[in-house]
Image (tube, rainbow, N blue to C red; front, side, top):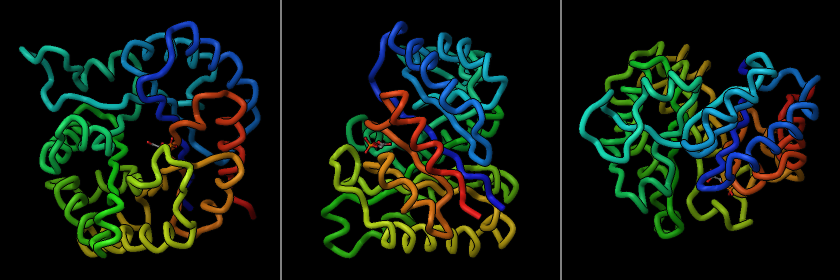
Amino acid sequence: MRIPVIAANWKMHKTLSEAAQFVKEFLPQVAGLEGVDIAICPPFTALGAVGWALAEAKGRVGLGAQNMAKEAQGAFTGEVSGPMLKDVGCTYVILGHSERRSLFGESDELVGEKVRAAFGYDLIPILCVGETLAEREAGQTDSVIRRQLLAGTDQLSTAQVARAVIAYEPVWAIGTGKNCNPADAQATIEGIRGWVGDRFGAEAAKAVRIQYGGSVKPNNVSDYMAQPDIDGALVGGAALEAGSFAAICAGAVRKG
Ligand code: PGA
């Protein structure tokens, strides 16, 4: 049985004091929670502080970054590498978020190189895929996602794919309050799992955790978790407030 994983993507939000305050409020609210993996992905500047604050949770809440360079070190002004993320205590790294793709020009191939590099540094990539509204309306959802998956998992081993997290985030649902209908998200995610099965085998398909992301809130998370192929959520706006994110984590525990 796959353990759901809920990740907070803080994007470019929170100063050090705001981040510390969040963790202080958040940890007691999830103290007794079992059956869900939780990760917080702050901006680079707050990784160290959040990592320290999370140490109290003794590994129950993981630390993640929102991006990573594919190189380990060198003359790459402004970039942060996998070994640096590992050094600061990260377990996860979000890769190929639609904002990285659309605003910072990250290609499918670059995202794939980063995913491969992340495994090389023992980080678990959260590989984001998803179609824009125009692509959806043109009936291209499946082909876009297959293209992103093909490049995003290029040269990975079956064991690596089994450990990866994939986040299906329809771009039109991100930050808009227009969340994808849970049945539609299930259909797309079932397709992603099927694709993994065809390419990497049944074991990898069974093990890989696939999240839904896009306007997930405390009041809709259980609708996603009721779907058989959805293994958690990548949460932006609703993860900025401790009570709201804790409610989402609680709502992600599978019933029965
Ligand atoms: P949202 O963002 O929850 O604010 O829609 C999700 C994301 O960008 O990962």
